[in-house]
Amino acid sequence: MIYDIEYETMPREALEAIQLRRLKATIDRCYASVPFYRKKFEAAGITPGDIQSLKDLQRLPFTTKQDLRDNYPFGMFAVPMENVVRIHASSGTTGQPTVVGYTARDVDTWAGLMARSLMAGGASRGDIIHNAYGYGLFTGGLGAHYGAEKLGASVIPVSGGNTKRQVVIMRDFGPTILTATPSYALHLAEVAEELGVSFRDLNFKYGIFGAEPWSEKMRGEIEEKLGLVAVDIYGLSEVIGPGVAMECHEAKNGLHIFEDHFIPEIINPETGEVLPYGEIGELVFTSITKEAFPVLRYRTRDITSLNPEPCICGRTVVRMNKVSGRSDDMLIIRGVNVFPSQIESVLMEMQNVEPHYQLVVDREGQLDILTVMVEVSEAMFSDEVKTLQGMEREITKNIKEYLGVSAKVKLVEPKAIARSQGKAVRVIDNRNI
Amino acid sequence: MRAEQISVFLENKAGRLCEVTGILAEAHVNIRALALADTSDFGVLRLIVDDTDKAKEALKKAGFTVGKTNVLAVEVPDRPGGLHEILDFLQSSHINVEYMYAFVQQTGNNAVMIFRFDNTDEALRVIQEKGLRVIDGKTLYGM
Image 1 (cartoon, rainbow over the protein chains, first blue to last red):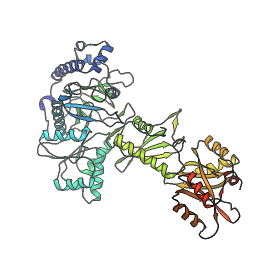
Image 2: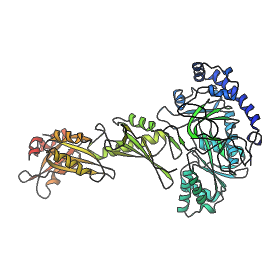
Image 3: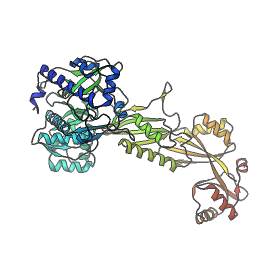
């Protein structure tokens, strides 16, 4: 079923007319209300009037995560704070998370997009949605929640964690839709099995999984173990949150981008050149309806390609293929975005800890395990084991506090971390996603 | 009256200890006493050697993280209860022992224990006041 039949199945020509109108309005607003954009336009010698076609979008400069950090916390907001009704933030070290804001209309837009997504994923009014995305600053929990209510489904705001209680709720409340990160879904199934509850005997029909990369192999495993149809959802807080693009359960072949709200581009991450449909590159988004936090040509760093072929589900919008990687060194650990530089800041902030480190990511069972290897320098070394163990604990605690991710810290000898051509290898990802 | 101890950070991996003893052998450093404290991931090797600076330099050159700490070498009567009397005395004097280990050689009829205290100066004062014998570094390295 299609939630917004008019917009989701619009003929290309009509869609592009709407896109251009909305794009122009967004550009006007950014230029008038966000000093950052005005400066960028001026530096590039462009005025809003220069953008007369969708192709002209290519003339605009890109916006990067660093730009958002430089304007921390509210510098990118395009409306006065009294119009902002919600604030979300991505993980960051002290003072450096990415902060996004929403007007009441933005919250409503987002809920509508999530309602579309949930319906594309098989949900409808009358379904009970077990929402195991984390609630809080992370956009996953509240995003899915508002969408579920908009759709008219019954939502259980169970959030992440407390897995045993979740299993009891799943058994007793009989939810029909599961929303979670794919790795947490598999973890749920494992814990359920330990408690003698078979997922296949529960009422689940569809699972809507996202916030971390997962493969077709993992889809097969989830569908087999959980006895449901697993579909992929995409989003990022900088653009709006989950609900930027969504796979339909009919085709399960690429994620429909809601182009009446976001214009996607694929670029060569090295040169910035825009690539044609079908070619693989970095995904870039321009929001065209957001009020509080519009983004122009935001570089997601996600690597994928676009597919304009019509879909069997009837949607006419372009599809993005599953994200195959990143054009930067960001890791996604149990749904949390982690940059090696954030770990480095944590280590640097701690007295005496020289940041010679390496991140090793493994998947044990269904959960990502992050190990941070830190080389012991003379300054941090102690002849007392308890001091060294205290240091390990402190690093773990600080990483958890600043980044929101649990890490195992391991002290290693100097030069234990492999260096390639003199440069330390910062990340070893042993997960075969 | 203090003695110097070097400590070496070791990962809990096969062959690491052997690597250290090899480096010291090559540098003609004689190990006088040693103790190893370990966790599941790493260990700290503590050594009293005949030439602290030479040992430290050789190990650092080989890439090890090396520290230097002051410890006290205290004579302990070599009979039942000998060590207990000293520990009992230290406890009643509120001196904390971080760790301790035995020295290989005896002096006369006494054993020698290496003590690492949280406050070495205070420990030295109290121990000397009590009339216990502390062996200075130079004598210790040559024993």
